[in-house]
Image 1: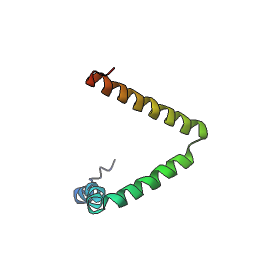
Image 2: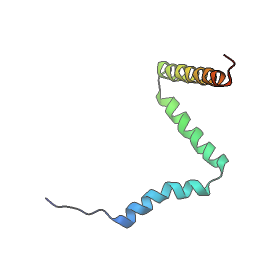
Image 3: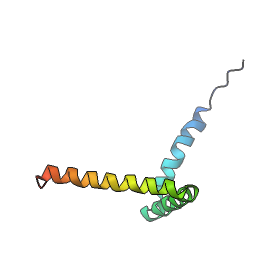
Length: 75
C-alpha cells in the first residue's frame, strides 16, 4: 500500500482561496453570487419541496417574533 502525503502548500492555498476571494468582493457582488446559487437550488426542487421550505421559514419567523415579544414582556 502506497501512502501518499498531501501537499501542505496546496492545502493552505485551497483553504485561503475562497476566503481571500470573498474578502476582495463587494457586498453587492457577493449578493449577486448568492442569488445565482439560490436560483439554481430552487430550480432543482419540486414544488412540494419549495413549499415545505417556505412553510418552515414562516414558522421560524413567527417563533422568532413570539420569542422577541416574550422578552419585551408584550405577550
